[in-house]
Every structure is written in structure tokens, then in C-alpha cells.
Image 1 (cartoon, rainbow, N blue to C red):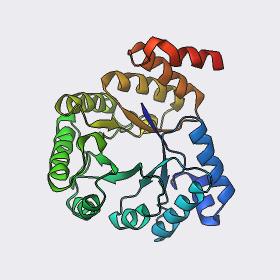
Image 2: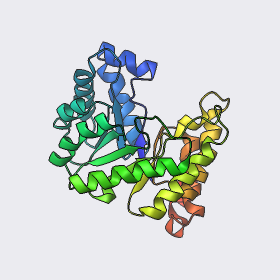
Image 3: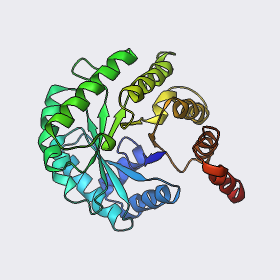
Length: 264
């Protein structure tokens, strides 16, 4: 599974403070910890809501790249911010997070995707009406976006990641089931397209969130999850991932599981 490290996100108070104070050491420590824990991409989000997102994201990119040369995911809802900051990324393997079915946002992203068809792209299954309450509608939004992007750019299906939007089960107990159904339906339609999610969203507002996240990851993998935006430094979630992949036949000769046990 492709792990996208979630920790360098301005919605976290400690990261917001570090961005405001330009605390290089703090950000670099977060980057190296996540990469050492197995993150394939480091998600960088600088959305403080203060009108400085472009400058702050550029600073994050430069700060992280001083100690890490691995793949990055640039996380912004503003196509202009992504356009300005994409050129700062040294590693050619880069992910843009994200695009939605909202008309204005799609139109803003298409010129960037035409210019950079090599990027990985995260699609969110929401449109101008918001997040649908059915799996069928979410898949329909994803399908419309996939058809639009592949018809108007050279982006390949293999580089598309669809986020079917995990919502908290504390709000509606069926939210987990809706997500499972959506990724199953999507994988039947587009086997080459990858699925992803913000893993910890499912447990928001509930006690012992890490336990919920673990079991949610297990079921999601069985339903066809290919990737997750998550905290790779959490030992319990890494163990759940390792064992799940083994019992699902994704760990040849159980070598990763055996190595995990030896390390423990």
C-alpha cells in the first residue's frame, strides 16, 4: 500500500505554529520521522487561512527538501498555489492533492494538468452540491472527473488516486459502509485507478480513535484500498497494515510479516 504521511498539515496546531515561526528544525524532524517510518509521500499542507499559503507552502517544500529527497504531495485547494509551488519540487515523482468535481476548481486545475501530465493526482468525490450521501453518487462524480481529465490531458489512469471521502461514523454510523461500497464499485469500473482516503477522519469525535483507525484500515484494504493519508509513525497502524496485507495475500511468502516480527 502507498502511504502518504499526513503529519505536516497546518490544521495541526503544532505545525501551524512551526509554519508561523518558520521553525525549520521542527518541520524537518517531522519529515524525517515519517520517511523513516515508511511514508512513500510526504503530504505538505500550509493552509493557515491567512492569505500566505503560497509563500508558506514554498517554505515547507524548501525546508523539507534540505533533509529529504523523497516524493512529496502538495496539498492545496487553490490551483494557483499548486502551479506556483510545483516547480520548486526536485523529485519528479510528485502528487497534487487535490481536485474536486466543483466546476471552478476543475477549470482551474486543467491547465496545470495539461502542462504537467506526469503528476499523480488525487480526486475528491464531491461537487458543487457537496459530499454525496450515497456511494453511487460518489462513484459517479469520480467517473465524470476521470473521463474529463483523461480526455483533456495526457494524465494516465495509473496516476489517478480517488478519495471517496471518509466521513466520521460519530455523525452517521453508515459512513464507513458508504466508503467501503464506493471503493468496491470504483475498482470494478477502473481497476487501474488507485483509491485513497484520509484514514483518521472515520474516528473523529470518538474515544480510542487509533483502535477505530486500525480496524477501518483492515476492512478498507479488503475492499480495495490502495493508499491512505495517515500517520506512519503510529506503531499500531503499521502493525495492522502489515498483518492485513499478509492475510490478503499481498505479502509473498509472508516475508514482510516475518521481518516485522523480528524487528519487534
